[in-house]
Length: 317
Image 1 (cartoon, rainbow, N blue to C red):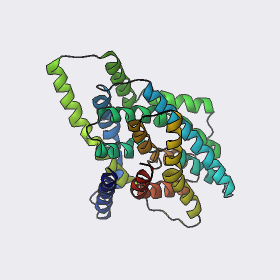
Image 2 (tube, one colour):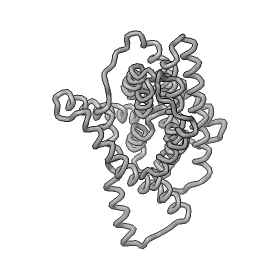
Image 3 (cartoon, rainbow, N blue to C red):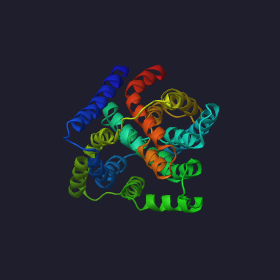
Image 4 (spheres, rainbow, N blue to C red):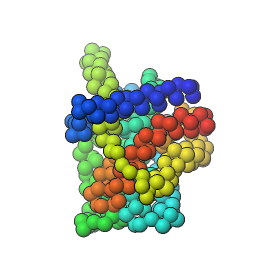
């Protein structure tokens, strides 16, 4: 299994590298990321959610996993703040460190990794989707803009209640949320639409969702930005160590506390080792929360995960 994890990580890295090569020769441009992002948001991710969650067995196991991920998120934010203070960084730099270590790109990186490792395991895919959305995506939308505003050097000050309310409203209006609710309802109430229509829907969803394992990697390749480590290398190194070394150890400890099964632990390990969320960089830029440092951490963490993931997976297996 460890060998397969290594080869899968190399395969994912090669896809991102191929996109970077295409960018180098002008065959694709960073502006193309908008098209890919819209395809993922409005078609691929909703189809993937419906296809993988509708036929899965849902229960309290996902709730325990969500609680585990939420606890890890708050531990990461606390550790990032403490590390920033210990290194005597500025307030915006501490905020950037919190944004890029507390919130992970679970939808973009974790899904392709899980698909390569367990392509036909519907239960694992359903666990990852539900836990990722409620345990990471929603907290990111709620907390990231608040942290960015509190720590950033911005003149734009929005009441925290309005920020949180706007984030929730935006999330519940998204196609991903509608697909998630519909899939959960169909699964819990075991709804069927007939053999013929059901087969048509199944094949359509599968065709649309297949892009969910390739397009996110293309998006990563389009959005990566080369940055400088000058003057920030120790902060960047701390962020990468926290994401790729400390988080897996904490996950393993919390998994024992919540008595998660081996399959659930696999999903949690993949979720918690994913690199910094690109959304965090967007908030850092909007509220001037050391956006250059945030971009550097995102860049380095995405590149490092392809090396560190198989190493930590093997160590904790």
